[in-house]
Amino acid sequence: MLVQRIATDGNGTDATTLHAAEYDGLGRRVEKVVSNCGDLDGTFRFWYNGQQVIEVRDGSSNVLTQAYYAEGDQGGSLREYIDELVALKLEHGYAVVSQDANYNVTTLTDLGGRVLERVFTTEYGQPILESDSYFGDYDGDGDVDSTDDGFLGSGQTCWGTATGACRVFDFNGDGTLDAADEAIMTALVAAPTTNRVHHARRTSPAGNLFLHQGLVYDPEIAAYQNRARPRRTPPQEGLPSLRLQQAHEWRKNG
Image 1 (cartoon, helix red, strand yellow):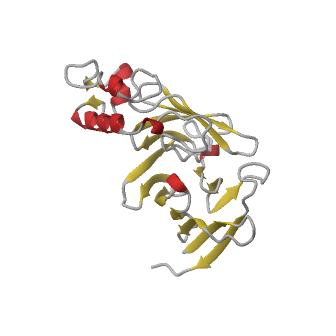
Image 2: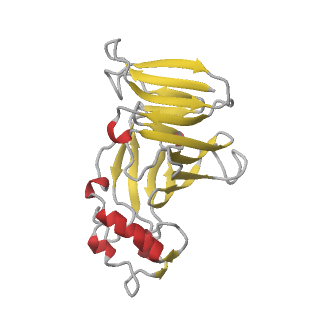
Image 3: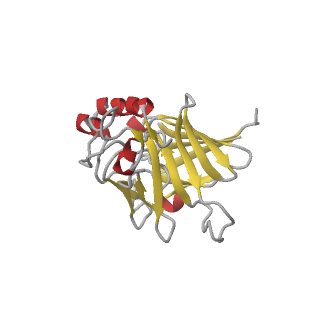
């Protein structure tokens, strides 16, 4: 198993670890540990179908993301690109993925048809994310609050079969609005509103990791996980004062 460590090295002496990753015998990253990066810190584990990332979990095995790809042979009638995403199951709901002609993720849309966030890509491949809404934002004002919660519940506008705009409350994607969805909505309303709409961000408020050409983006080091290796953008963009120092060590599996 390959262990990779990435640290800041602005003056040639800083050995603070930002990102440590482990790879399996097929060159797939199976775990990364982010440290000294504030809210980005944590342990993340990756599950695959071949070379496609299909699930991401945290260090406690809680599912953070499940990815759904187009089926069929590459270049066929159903799938045009190996990393052609069609949908994501994120922490608070399902999102439909739209891509441009270069297969860059451009928008996430909730089950109610509302845009959650838009992704713009600089000429150096760095993402800029603009949030439009969030899961559970029934009135579309960019915040999830008690006003939205008032539309969900037994005897309210949205209950039972999830249809139309009420699908924004179908957090588990089962087509039914019930007590399980109401419990998630209560938790969202109680959460800080600062977790909702943000502008010109480099990370996704909804928790999406798949950006440029459907590749996984690592915001802590401003790099994409391009199959078996991280790929940095040119130094003119991204982190101009940050050089990446990598240390590799081979360990036996098991």
